[in-house]
Structure formats: C-alpha cells, structure tokens
Amino acid sequence: MSEVLPRTITRPMQFSGGCATGLSHRWQGGQYCSIMTKVGIVGCGIYDVNTAAHFGQAIAIARGTPSHPLVEPEDLLEAKIVDASPQAQAYGIEVGMKGKEAVERMLVAQ
Image: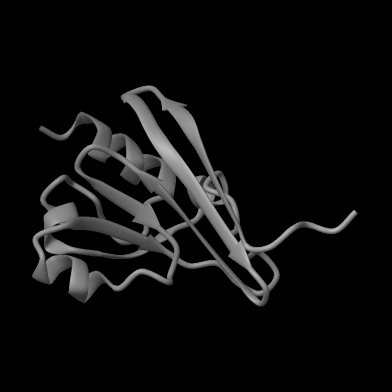
C-alpha cells in the first residue's frame, strides 16, 4: 500500500534534557522534518537561517544527502549541523555538532 500524501506526523521525542516535538511533512516530490523545543528548532535544509535570525529565532540546520535524506525527525539526530542563527549560537550550538546535541542544548536553555 502506498503512502497517502500529503501527510504530517507530529510526535513527542524524549531527550536527557527534556521533551521536544518531532515533525515530519511529506507531499508528492518533497519532504521536510524538524525537532521543535521551547526555545527553537533543529531542522532540515528547507529552513532559512537568515529569516529566522531576522525575527530573533533560534534555528539550527542540518542537511541530508540524496542517499541519506532527512525525512523523519529522528534522521536529524545523527546529521551534522551546517548552519545556525545567532540566537541558536548563543545557546552553544556550533556548526559540525550532531543534531541531537543541538536539541539537547536548546532543551536546557532558559
């Protein structure tokens, strides 16, 4: 049976620093995913860091590859962060760290 599109899935995700919300969105020919915390988002490359920064939002971006696309929020956990807004950087998020570590840093941010 093929997947019914479009579709959105939202689920709680537990981390050592607390709980976040994982989101996955799919439509014909595309998808994106993210993990939302109380202070910001760790997301795939569909998000624009400059727009988030303009509005004072913390966002850290990971990018998939054709052989390893980021489809489900769990895919972000091992993916490397390739960009982060100044607000995310203020929480200690750095380019090169894994998505899971970025989520953990957002979860303990005040």
